[in-house]
Length: 249
Length: 172
Image (cartoon, rainbow over all chains, first blue to last red; front, side, top):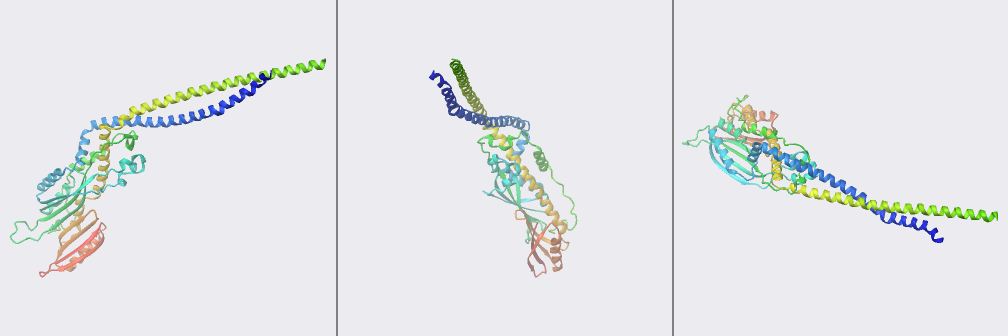
């Protein structure tokens, strides 16, 4: 009879022990696991979007292979200095100038900073790898001689060649006509110093670090159209508004 | 006798309520056990879901590297750099500098050297003339032009033939 009286406290105690000692930790564990699964789901969803975006953008590039090639010519994987010599010589001969000197200097400092790359890259912490994007550069200095009109056309055309470039300096100088010289007294010496860029392709460690893949947006090819137009467009020489059409005469 | 019967009835009622409470406690205990079992089952289910998620992520992550990703990354970088470059190219145009020189050079002045340093945002000009008046007017023309700022006059030299060589720099 007395044993019967102990049933209630015994099961009550046992229930409490199970609730506090086992069920509570399991309940905490469930909450943790649910939170981990929610986080994992976010990552998996994001990964799915990225994989889908990689496939979409690749087929987009397949359809726009011309644009891809234009950009590869514009910012090649290697120095490709020969194309610059060729363009320099071709433009000079087209505009009646004579090339006299070409110098290439290797440069280690890049001029395009991350700040220039816009808000997207600067503000997104996941794009840290991309923030370091900057082309490798080298300096080209070319010298040529010829008339002023030719120089004008030359500078305009040469700065439109299909390469990534920053004009650093250009100058025109009238030389002293040496007695018996075959060079016309109207002849000028022109110098142009340009920084050219190229971009070595680096393998991507993980597409998860590429901020632009997180947005389901297609490539915007319009800058390439602008680039193509700018390169093709050779502005005709306009009349000087006033003053002297040739200030060197 | 009546007292004995009353005590016996009260004792029996207490016993019954004690047994009832014990039975309820036993039921509660088994409910607790069943809940605990349910929680264990749910934890196992969550573990499976997590493992499936990991497997899926592992499968998907194989596509995070490789030629396709490298290709679009290279294209995107070039696209961005080209936009930056085009923006700066719009600001600097060699034709504008030459047109500017043509428009403000005085007829009595001959420019000997015109150097445009875009990096330093500065032009350096050397000119020839036969009159100091033209020299002053030419420098004043540059100084008054809104495009040029901070005109700094350099050296002057007059040759035996009366030709004045002057130089100055201006920022833009």
